[in-house]
View (cartoon, rainbow, N blue to C red):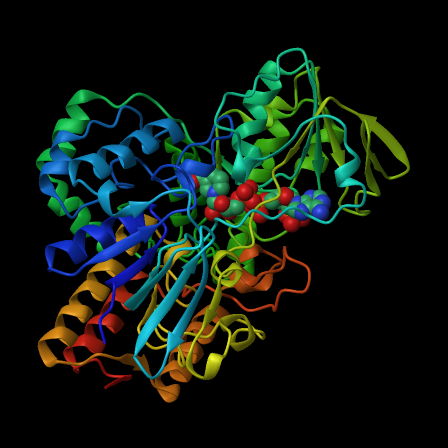
Length: 529
Ligand code: NAP
C-alpha cells in the first residue's frame, strides 16, 4: 500500500528540525506539522520579558554540524529568547528545512492502521496524510497550564501567559500588574516587569530557589577558544549526568568542614548558574547535605532583601533542586523596590480573579494587567492533547491514565512505529535539551535506516522490556531527593494528574549506554515485524 511519507514529525522546534534534516539525509521522506507560524518551539512561544536559556549558549546549541558551530556567533553567556529564535531560524534556512514544514497546523489525531501498518494522521486544517512512522517532537514544556482559578474570565484587562506570550512587545510602563507564580519564567520576567510597571504585585504560592546567572557579553577570545575545541567540550559534556560541561565536586557537602564548604558554595555562587548544584556530589542524595546548600541560599536572601518580613516570605522551605533550580538576574533585589509587593499565598489559594484584579486571603488587589507565570502540563501535556491511537484503537491517554510508561522514553507498547523525542522516561528536562534531542534523533534515524535495510516495516517495544525500563526509571528516581516534592517533574502542578516521576534521572551517560546496548543487541526489547 502506498504511503504519503516515511515519517510525519510533530513540531518544528529543535527536535523536529533536526529530525527532518537527519531523515532527509538518509533518503526518507518526511513532513513536519507545526502549530506556530515559525520554527523554534519553546523559543517561539515563550517570548515573555527576560526569557533566556539557563544553559550557557555555547553548550545549548546543535553539535551535528561543525560548520554551523563555527559560523554561528553567540553574543552572551546565556542567550536571550530572541537570539535563540534567530539561531533556530538560521538553522531552518541553512539546511533548507521550511519546504517540508507545514506551519500553523496542529495534528489533531494520529491513528495506527494495523492492517496497512501505517499511521493515519489528521490535522486541524483537515489534511489527511499517511506515514510509516510518527515522530513527536512536541517539547516537554509546551502545553501551558492555566490554573482553574474562579473568575479568571471576568478580568477586564489583558491576561498574559508566559508560555504563550504575544508576538508584539508588551509594554507595562505606567501599568499596575499582578503576577501569579514564582517559577523560572516568573523569576526571569519579574525584574524586567518591575522596572517598567507602576506597581507589580507578585502572588507567591511556593517560594523558589534561584542562583544568579552573572550573564555577560561573550569575550571574543573565549568564543575563539570554544570554537577551536568544540569537540572536546561536547565530549566532556556527554560524560556528565546533565549533559553540561561543568565540574562536579566529588566531595560530600556534609562531610566537608564548614569553612571549606562555604568557600565552595561562594565560588559557585560567584561564578553563577546551574553549576551551583554541582558544588558537592550529594546535594540531591542526602537531606543533611541538601540543607547546607539551602541554608547558603537562604543566607543570601537575608543579605539582599531589606525588609525582614519579605525576606522571610521569599525563603524557600523545601529541598533545593527538588523543583527545578532557577537562574536569575536581580530577582531578590527586585523586592527592595518600592513599586513591588509580595503576597504570600502559601497557606490559602487565591479566592478568585475579579474584574479589576483578584481576591486573596480576604483582601482585594487591583491591577491593569494579569500575568500567569503558572507553568506547563509538563512532559505528557502536549502529547496527550493529540488523539493518538495505537493497536485496537487504544488511546495513549487511556494507556497512560496512571502515568506515562515507555521503553527508553522513546517508544510505547501498543503504539508501533511511534517515537517520542525527549519523551517521559528519558533524561530530557534533567539535561541540556540540545544534546538529549540530538541523541534521540540519531537513535531514531539510525533505527529507521536499520529497519529499511532489514526489510522490517514495524517496530514496537515488548511489554517486559518496557516494564523493566519503567522499573529503572522509578528506581533511579527513588534514590534522589528530587522525587520527594510537589513539582512538575511528578505532575503535582496539574490537579488530577497521576503522580509519577516522569524523567529518567540516571544521567545522560547511563542513558546513552542503555540505548547503545539496545542497538548493539539488535534492537533488544523491541519486536520487529
Ligand atoms: P513552574 O516552574 O511550574 O512555575 C509555575 C509557578 O506558578 C509556580 O510558582 C507555581 O506555584 C505557580 N502556580 C501554578 N498554579 C498556581 C495557582 N493556581 N495559584 C498560585 N500559584 C500557582 O513554571 P515556569 O516558571 O514556566 O517554569 C517551568 C519550567 O520551564 C522550568 O522549571 C524550566 O525547566 C523551564 N524554564 C526554563 C527557563 C530557562 O531556561 N531559563 C525559563 C523558564 C522556564 P507552586 O510552585 O506552588 O506550584
